[in-house]
Every structure is written in structure tokens, then in C-alpha cells.
Image 1 (tube, rainbow, N blue to C red):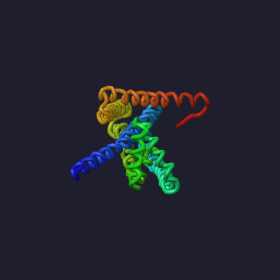
Image 2: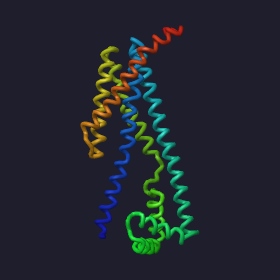
Image 3: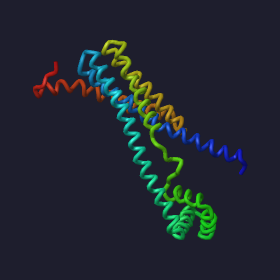
Image 4: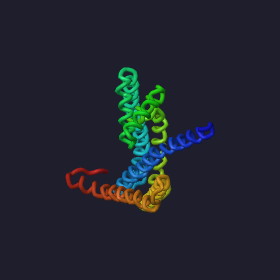
Length: 246
């Protein structure tokens, strides 16, 4: 394999790594659309004042983006620590019980369809290089990769910004339009954004784009409708138990 071939392999690897960021973008944006939509729709059903809707929506948007970012960071950090411990343990085993680890490599390749004789030959070759040996154990036995371990700070930032960006669609109409008109535009813009997000997600996964768009949009429609119904019914339920809100 030439140098150019090696560069192509690493370019492809880096491309896939960048695409893995899509998880945070889709997750953050989808929640940023759905949760604030439920909040503003619910408040819009319970009040006649845009101000209250805006306060509730903006408070949720900022608090939600911080929460999502922090959650992404802490979960990535916890995952990284577990992975680092597992890799360190595997490296120690290669040093302390090399014969057992060599047998494990042979068993792993045999489980993938190689004959016992060929698996043994592959294990003999791999264990001539400590780097290749450890990498093979980490990737095949643990299902991990050294390259997959990162700090999670970028994931947290992408998640938070995606959430905040998504929240603009259901909230902005209440800045510009009367309450009931804003509600319609809020739902409409959010559903359109959800449909676009579903199409985008399906396109990246080489799936059916129309189906993906409709699926995500359907979830949004249910969320917004449930929030509005809850907001409409809540004042009635509170009055029934003797609680009034001025």
C-alpha cells in the first residue's frame, strides 16, 4: 500500500468521524424544536399574553441548551473514563499474560470465519507488533478504538448550540405576531423544520427521505398538540381544585 493509499484511508476515517457529530446536531436540534414547542404551545393555551409565552419559551430554551450541553459533556466524560480503564486493563493483560491474550486473538478470528490454522497464523503475525497486538485486542475484543476517545467538549458545544438554534423556530413567531396567529406560525415553522431535519437525517443514512421527514414531523405534531391541550386543560383543572391564577 502506497503513501497515497494510506492518506485516502485516513481521509475516509476522518470523514466518518466528522459525520459522527451529526448525532449531536440531530439530537440537539430535534429536542430544541420539540421541547420549546410543547412549552410555548402549552402556555399559549393557558394565557392571552405573548409576554408570558416568550418568557417561558426563552427560559426553557436557554436552560435546556445548558442542560443538554452539560449532559452531553458528562456522559462523554463518563464513557471516556470507562473506555480508558478498559484499554489500560487490556494493555496490562498483554504484558502480564501474553499467551492467554494471543489465544484470545486466535479465537476472535476463528469466530469471524477463519479456520483454526489460519486464525493461529494471523495471531502469530499480529503479536509480532505490540502496537498491532494491543490495537487488535482493543478493537476486536472490546469493540473500542483509541481514536473514538475524546474529551466531549465539542459534542457538548454542538449539542447546546443545536438545541438553542432549534428553539428559535417555535419561539420567534411570538415576538412578531398576535398570540393565536403566532401559535399557528410556531407550529407550522416547527413542523417544517422537523420535516427538513428528518429529510436531512435520512439522507445521511441513505434512507427514505420522505418517510424520515414525515416520521420526525409526526412526533413534533404530537408533542405540540399534547402541550397545547395540556395548557388549555390545566387552568380548568386547577380551578376545579380551588387554585386560581391571576
